[in-house]
Each structure stands twice: as C-alpha cells, then as structure tokens.
Image 1 (cartoon, rainbow over the protein chains, first blue to last red):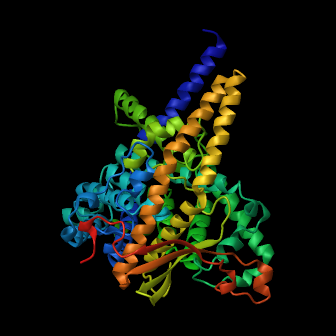
Image 2: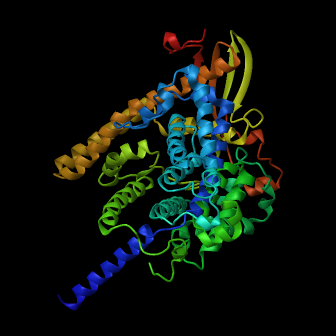
Image 3: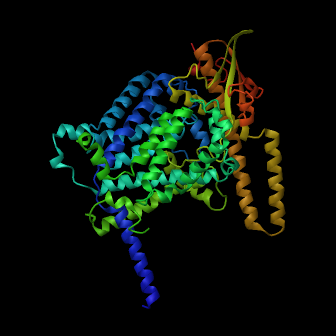
Length: 308
Length: 249
C-alpha cells in the first residue's frame, strides 16, 4: 500500500474511533436523571392541561375527526393512538391512569417501566390531537423516547431513594446512559439546524425585523413589548442574535469554549419566548433539552445532594 | 471533530465495555436511525419528486409510528399574521352566541389556549393552501399539457417525474378536500354540542401584524382594524352529515 492509501485508512480509523468514543463510552446517568425529572414534569403538566378539554379533543365526538391523520397520510398510515379503540366511558379513567404513569415517571418510580409507558402515551396523545399539536409535543415525544432508552431513573428518582443507596454506592457509568444523552443532544442539534436554516429563507430574519413579527402578534402576546417599536436597532440586534445562535447551534454547542454561552442564550431565548409569547411549556421543554449538554461534574457540583 | 474542541469527554468516561461486534451492530442501527431522523425535517415541508420524496415515503411508517418527521421550522421562514376561527350559533332564526377561537378569555390554561390557536391555524392553512375545484382542474390540465410536450420532445425522464407529481396531486386532492370538510364539520358539531343551538356559521379571519410605525401612531395589537373581513367557510346544522349513532340525543 502506498502512503496515500495508508493515510486515508488512518483517517477513516480515526473517525471510527471518534464515533466509538462519542457513542459508546460509558457515562454517568446524573445528567439523564436531571433531564428525566424536568422533562417528566413538563410532560406531566402538558397532559394535565388536556384535562380541561379532554372530551373536546379526545372524546368520541372529538373536534378533530378520528381519520384526520389518516387522510394526511398519503397511503401509509402508521399513526396510532389508544384513543382510537378506547370506549367513551373509559376516557377519563384512561386519562387519569396516564397522568399517574407520567407523574411516576417524573418522580422516577419503576422508571424502566414508566419511562416506556410514558413515551408510548406521549406519542399516542400527540397522534390523536393532530391539528392541535405543536413543537411542545414534538420535543416531549423524542425526549420521552430517549429517556426510555437509557437508565434515566438512576438519579433524582424515587427508585434511588427507595433503594437506600447513598453517594458511596453511585450507579456505575453505562454506555446506555451515554447513548441516550447523545441521542437527545444530536436531536436538539437537528431541531435547531432546521429551525435556523428555515429562517434563512425569510426576508424579515435578514432585515432584522422578525422579532417584531413575533412580539406584535396579538394571539401570542402575554407581555407588552410594543415599546420595541421605538427601538428598532434593538429588534434588529435580537433578530440577528437569534438567527446566528440558531444556525450555529449544531456546531458551537460542542466546543468547551462556546457551549456555556450557547446554553445561556438558549435559556434566555426560550424563557423569553415563554414569558412574552405565552409558550412557557414549550420554552421550558427546550431549556430541558439544552440541559442534556451539561456535564456530570457540573450537575453533581450544583445539585449533587438532590440527585441521591 | 477534534478531540480538543469537543467538551463532552467530561460526560463520557473510559473505554467502552461493549465488544467490537456489539459496537458495530449498534453503529449500524444508529446510522439507520440518524438517517431516519435527518430525513424528517429534510423532507418536511419541502421534498423533491426525484430524490427526497421517495425517501420520505419509505420512512413514513417510522416517522408516523414514532412521531418523528417534523419540519421544526419554528417561526420560519417569517413570523406571520395569526388566524382565527369565528362562529355564529343560531337557534332557529335567533342568534344564540358569537365567539371565536383562540379566545384568551375562555381558553385556559395557556397551553390549552395554544391548542385552540393551533387548530385555527391548521384550518386556515388547509383552506388557504387548497385550490378550489376549478383551479385544481386547470392546474392538472396545464401539467398534463406540459407532460405531453416533454414526451413529444423525447424527454421521457422529465415527463415521468412530472407525471408522478401530477398523479400525486390528483390522488391527494380528494383526500385533502375530505379532510377539510370533516374538520369543519367536526368543529361545527362540537360548537353546537357545547353551546346548544341548531345551526352554526364558521368563518376564518386573519389578524395582520401592525408595523412599528402604526404602533407608534397608536394602533393596538388588538385593534379590530387589524382583522380581515370574516370569510364564511361553512354553515352546518346540528348532526348534519353525522352517522345516526354519532348524533346528539
């Protein structure tokens, strides 16, 4: 083999090593546990809120026809929901049971089982509410799936508390904990990449006026930010910071130097949207997704006593 | 990816306890899953007839079953105006109730308000993006003419791609009409079930975004002048179009 072939082989081998290190090294599950606790709370609240309009959206005479998603499907129809075969009189008992499962998942009780059930329930509710679902359901669903994949109940959980294990017998780092976290992180990057590049098509994002379009929308408004009309330079600045942050997120969330800044901007952007545009649940679940980028030592340092 | 630049090493520890065979098998699954994941937003809302649409079709079972495949284009390409559904409910000739959704005075908690908001946006978008029968027929006629021209010119591959598009549109159009009709019907029946009455008129409206200059001159975001004229999208009687078992007692 000549030198070029060897260098290509070495280059390929180094990429395989990077791939293996990225996905298959064992990791502590403390970050995963934190994400489970917080995502579990948002998921629980999301579905508690459905109680106010349960029959409107999920009852036998739902405002969204049962085959609405079937007609969206163009041939294949693998959308599924337990509401499709649930008799009307079982609507409330099934909903209460679902809420109990989600609450137990958030608290981390029998997490191996409740995590899988929660993931299935989140997908099932979202599939039935086609037409009324939004980003919140999308993030809830993939977080629930990845949290069901790994040992998300080893920290911040009733499972750990009831087992009587202290800090001295911390759970052994595992590959599955790492895999789950990596999938959350990669999925978050995918979300931001397409959210950001989608905005590159919009004139108002280039003009620097898109944030005005968001704060001047009466249906979203929960905080009066119309004073921004007189401070358009600030609107421009916020718009471009948002655009640059979102487009670059997939790349700059990884380096040690930029990661804290990108997480802090994420917190500011999402909580800002939550407070000003009334989408606090969506804002919170995006922040929770971002927390998957925290490191285990950082979480242990600040929340260690609670993790047990 | 450089080792020095990536800070996730402080999360993952040590060498993998998994054997090489396990790692390769899981790598294979992971690569497949990442492909599935990527081609969700890559094919939604825009896909090409030649490449990404066939991929999207093949991946659809997984996207649907796992609730993946979303576009994630939040506030893209531009934050736009919002859309409302308003309604008038009659009992005989008497106007019983007027209302709209979303309605922040009635829909609570906020996430439920947002559900109603998304429903009104869904209905508006469906109506807005679906041509009437005459426009649809005309677009089909033009497409068929174009296909014939390409075939005559011997450009069979291009003609085949266009034919595939034309057939897809022809297949989806009746399903879209049915979906919109069923959604309007379900909304109407639910409103009658909630508020009584025996007839309901449904309207859609757009609330335009005021410019900064308008706001400085005193326009409020809630100013009724920002609302477009209501467009009547349907008039429904109680239990109309429903099977007997679904009718209200």
